[in-house]
Length: 252
Image 1 (cartoon, rainbow, N blue to C red):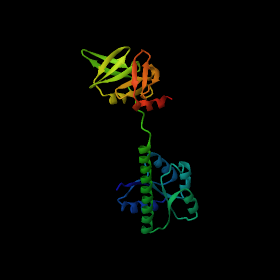
Image 2 (spheres, one colour):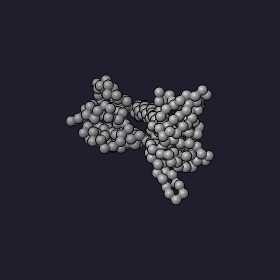
Image 3 (spheres, helix red, strand yellow):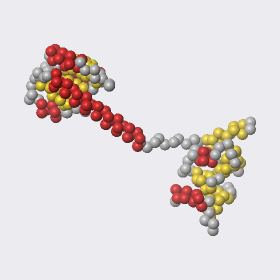
């Protein structure tokens, strides 16, 4: 079990010794520092990660309550107040105190306060972890960055084709044939794999063996079979099968 980090603040040496001695008997607690006044406590909180603070209320110059007000309630770790005076109890709990130990306190009462604080701390950590995991699981994934060029090895040369320059693509056995300005390039890749690399706002699948660049689309002509004749700006005539007509809805 991970040990919780504790700060002990009391202007009386016997008060600090009492708390530190009792905590030394607990393997689930580690005293990080002891402070004799409020200003030392503020400095310790600024320089150390603290899980729990035992804080005396009545101290010269700066009281325990003033420490909380200066640090800020939201920035404070959980607090167990330790004091000989009970008149501050109501204000202490307004400041979200975990517990309030009235001197002199028994070992049993001390351990009950520590057990209660650890239970609360563990529940808080578990709740935060669950919240974080839930946020990660439901967070929108980072958008995939699409490539702007395709590298094609052709015999003794390598061509870099800008994707936006592609007119259309057709399946050719184990290859795809990429048409660019009435020239074509063969790429050893499947249609599905290549389609996943293309921007769906620019390219549209019109047939299981054909993908077109929307910017090259001239017109669609409905045919009696339920298919469409697709005409590109360079005069190329292709067919949109009924299976892929639903892709038109994205542009309507």
